[in-house]
Length: 312
Image (cartoon, rainbow, N blue to C red; front, side):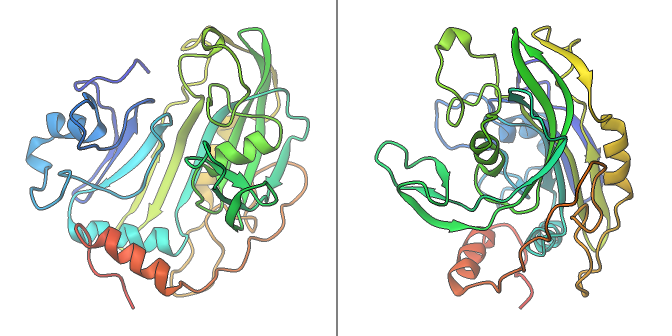
């Protein structure tokens, strides 16, 4: 996957109501800043000028977020009704997401569930970051769950590295990056939560990629699987030497996992009730807490421009 440009937008799913694109690393989703010469918004306007909606701030309704440094699957709703149906899936935790990452060191357990609560860091100079409960300056930590499955062990530029599949079962800011760092296996190229090193030692990107996405809306199941960017043919610095779990098998499990009925308390897609292959079983996810007035107000403010009113 070459560096992003206005012309080289990759679309991995398209229907009347949705697009899923394979976002480049180090590209913002949208921005009003004049110095942002490349954004996903600008790529979409260039490729699909007829789909831009003048009634929205950025022209397109992005259903979720990806960090600036993260590549991979990102869903775009093409009308208000589609945006509303996608919002309800995210709100009800019916969306399945899986990420690929290269992390420092050889992770010894082939599968684990990471359950550190995550809150905002109020420490001076670190207020743009998140941290785990118990860290000095950690404010309002919330339960957070991530499933990790080791795919391969190898070397990156001569250093020991593991290739892993990560499934966030909750949606905290920087959750995967914080959880991997807390384990002592930070994501390769993560300059915020990774190991301090000279700029010369940094790889060309952060090695985190949104690999798989499924949003089971009421009218269609939006499903996309993006190409794996962490293979030696695309990055000669990555040299795997031990296969732990074939990625193809995990993809089959992700695709076969049932979607829950939104009217019933069924299992979440690819949740611990339908575990990925690997030894051991993770603990059950935390009970879904009722939405607070503050959370509802925040959601309504976010949705006011581009979606339908959520159900009461």
